[in-house]
Image (cartoon, rainbow, N blue to C red; front, side, top):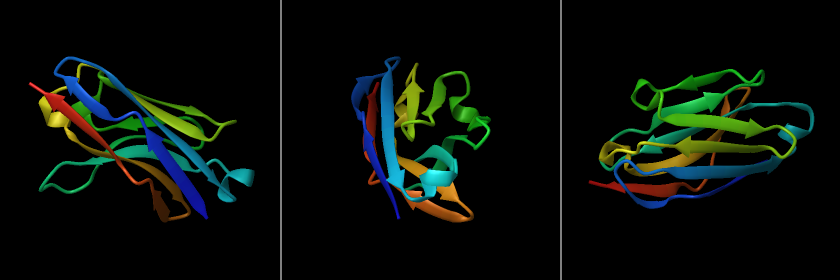
Length: 117
């Protein structure tokens, strides 16, 4: 019903930047603008919210990334991006694109982000 394709992960030194992109498709996008966002999961830890953007364009960020990460969305193309600046080793994780629609969650395959110190 929903397909999510992520790109943009990789290896970067601390203080560097990366941009993640997610292209979404599916019938739910024909008449709605579901909440889209990014989550991450580090080894041995639970998946956690990074940033989301809702139907009206309001954004929500985890405290740990405020001021460093920016989420953006293109409603026409059904894409969501995450610009990550001033990266820290603790940002190392698999990052997942997410779509939430009437309580159902859809996930991308994940993209690895590794920040070296």
